[in-house]
Length: 200
Figure 1 (cartoon, rainbow, N blue to C red):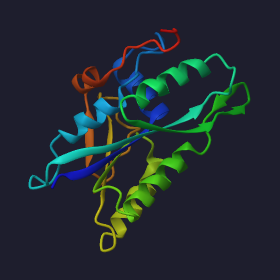
Figure 2 (cartoon, rainbow, N blue to C red; figure 1 turned 60 degrees about the vertical axis):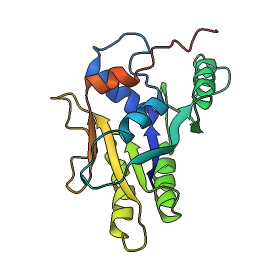
Figure 3 (cartoon, rainbow, N blue to C red; figure 1 turned 90 degrees about the vertical axis):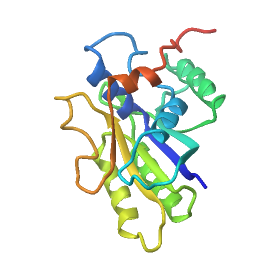
Figure 4 (cartoon, helix red, strand yellow; figure 1 turned 30 degrees about the vertical axis):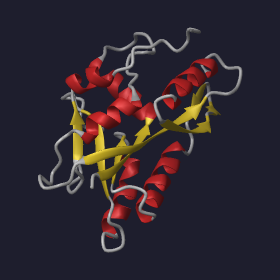
């Protein structure tokens, strides 16, 4: 029986991490975009720490992101992107962006992701949960599951972009966390070049 894998993507964190790692500053917004389901398939095929581990099967991909307000310039583009992902079996969880000074910021999306990881592990919805984020705020969710291994059979791993010397910000540097370090070759395999600002 294949191990059931759930993928949890902190989208803005992962997107900006790809832009920092593989692109120069500036450039179109499509730089850094990825196909979430392709990323899940790539991670399921990656080698893991335990060489005797069972084959993995991708069961779900969950993307977490802040949602622009209705009528804002980015709203329609985000809706088109979500529709494309939904056609590929991806679930999108959103929270409204909040105004702070002169910019819009995400509030609570990392907490939403962390809660889903812990609840999914407790309820047995996956055998392996992979968190795609460099945000060390995700560490408590991983530790929570690791500390309760006698009650929870699930394991949690991390995945993030790896392009030295841009590595100091990454989740997964802590001992005991298996981390998939994704390089430029991996990025090219899962990159999504679509321009969602254009109507098709």
